[in-house]
Image (cartoon, rainbow, N blue to C red; front, side, top):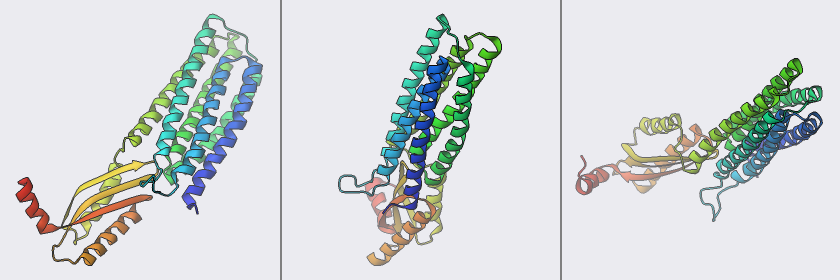
Length: 301
């Protein structure tokens, strides 16, 4: 049985796939009819959007699968992996668009502006609404795959604006050179977006720690409980929308195993209430005995 968050992520990814397919078909037709390289760049960018949304759709279905024997820490890393793959697709699109734009500088071609304008404007309006929906869902569900997908669509809106400017300049001046100029600028923007997505994905694939605000939340819970005499070896990591936390907490030596276990469970529950999708492992240690061990074995204190 999937959770509500998982269902919302899958629904958003499905909307993205359907909208990107429809928009891309329209852009490809417009590019063929208009002969515009900037519209071609939009069409290629949208092909990347389709692949990105498909990756997002697949990854959010896999990422929320529960841990199993072969994947004891779950499947959360599939989301940043999908984000990294999407960034590579954007790089390929940027290189292709840049190449086509440079070639057009030496051989400008006439453009059917009106057809291209109508399609690009309609596509941009549709993408504004889809992009907002994906961004909102990504933040509410903490999905890196949806964040990457939303970044694709936001980049698409900006590139669409650039294409509209290029087409209006061509129409106003009668000079088709504006088409490859804008296309080249857009290729650089697509490349910048790809680098940003890739950097975020790589950080998570390398087990980056939780944001400092979330670490502060964990530490405040540990410090606020008077039964916890101290803690150390607090480690956190992020995998997609999943969080992993482990730490050693120091409790009174006189506590029974059952009492120490109950305290540990209560603290873990507090952290689970404070952070979504978190897996916690607290190792309990006797306070005075741990201090003695540090003095004798590590010359501390």
